Structures are given as C-alpha cells and as structure tokens.
Length: 60
Ligand code: SF4
Image 1 (cartoon, rainbow, N blue to C red):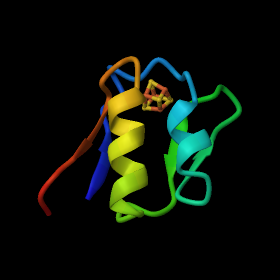
Image 2: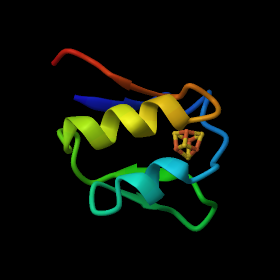
Image 3: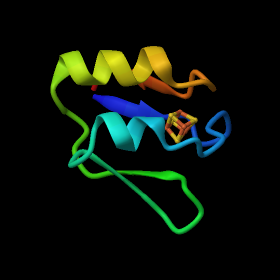
Image 4: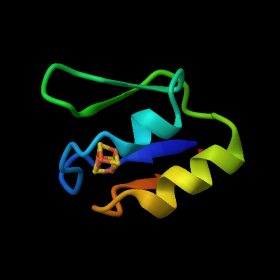
C-alpha cells in the first residue's frame, strides 16, 4: 500500500497532482491519502518525483 512519511514530507503537493483522486491536499498542502492502492504506474511516478522521498510502497 502507498504510504506517506509525514515527518519527511514537506508539502510540495506533487503527489496529489500526479495521483489526483487518490491523494488530496489539506489546507496546509500536506497529502491526505484517499486510496492507498492507486494505479501502480502513476504511484511509481509520484514516488520518483517526490522531492522529499516521503512516498513509498509498504507491504500490508
Ligand atoms: S510530493 Fe512528497 S513532499 Fe510533496 S506532498 Fe507529496 S509526499 Fe509530501
């Protein structure tokens, strides 16, 4: 499942842009995961582009 390291995340919002529908942003620009099993290709892109390396796949 897709997870966000909330300590590492700096609220750039790139993940929500790539995974719109799976990730929303809160009022401060930090991600809220709506779907922890989104499209794997898009998730891989979001993980690659996250500047804080805060996004990752984790085994359930
Ligand atoms: S792209 Fe990375 S740093 Fe930016 S909001 Fe998403 S998880 Fe946080």
